[in-house]
Image 1 (cartoon, rainbow, N blue to C red):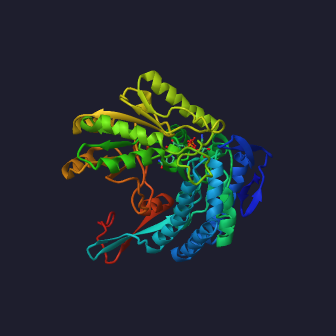
Image 2: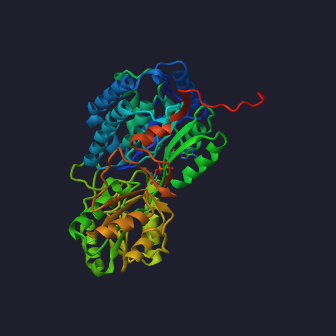
Image 3: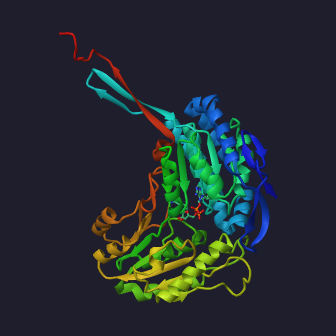
Length: 488
Ligand code: NAD
């Protein structure tokens, strides 16, 4: 199979003819050759998108008209549900049952933003009876969308849906380790009747195609999801053109368990929160903080459950933990396992390749106990099926540990004490907190992180803010006094 770029409604190879290979994580064999974009391909895609912005119908359509197309995109995604799940499973190593959920969520993203754009009002401010100030929202221009390799189709649509709803033509640069499912987007957009040039896709390596998109002066907004370090590079590059940036970055999210919580449910949430999606999840609960009164028994039960998490072929419906995305990433995660052991953390589950899976990027669900905040495995994002468990005694200590990393994406709290919940909700350093719950998304709410986990929020109206400019119009409805300089 070969994948090309999609520019101005046509499938095209790279101007240079360059390609790269994509590997199947379960075997590490090449199964896909992909066009490797560079600055010329990005320039062509931005030119097509810019033309769609200045001359095309899309930015000028009503919200209702755009919503009709978005709903058709959702239907086109749903009709390809099995294909998307199968591609995602093969391309990223995600277990097939979890890949299916991603295709559903992708369709939901489009339906949701169709509703947002049709129900969106514009703000009006009245100054007594003398003046009316009203906000005009305008699509900001060509949107550059750069996405990571984890749950790629869902995350691509999480950006595409609001950008298109707002009226922005887009250039999407998917991650090079998981390009396959994005290859379905051109036919989906065509089937839905999206005008040519509104959706453009350029594959390629981040430092080449991604960097060229960030540098391009005709792309006023970049929505990026990926590593914190890449986000920092993008911010530096984007500064030259003062671009709007939305940054969804890394995480090292704590799950805090107090002894008054429903410990059975907390255990289910801890296991699912870090081992679902292969642990390659920005909001993974990768640090579990447990009150010392229940610490030993919780660690024991967590280790026992982890040891029973079924690791296996991504396309097997019984598999709970599949193959990590790429051998390079696998090595990185395995390095962290070695580092954890060297640092003196207690390995109580996993830590190695299952013996029945000799090839591919497989790692058993791994649990380190007695992890202390000075350890690298406590501080750094591992982005795999590895969880660190740390004891605490008081609420103050739990908070200190929760906030003791550079990240601040999500946090999870397990307690039945209402006042404690409110106290911690105010002081935990995270963009999002789930209380006595697993990570259930509500697309209306602000999604994003604090500290090194990101800048800005997406979700509901927050996403529309990213892709629109607000112009304020001040309109006198009565004669306002005007100082008469020079009239005396
Ligand atoms: P990454 O930063 O390596 O790559 C992300 C994207 O950026 C890819 O498309 C890549 O090609 C591109 N890129 C790389 N260098 C670039 C450059 N110099 N200029 C422009 N683009 C460049 O991230 P990844 O390894 O693909 O994804 C995993 C990371 O994403 C983790 O840190 C994870 O926490 C984070 N993530 C965050 C969220 C969130 O919502 N906060 C969601 C999912 C993933």
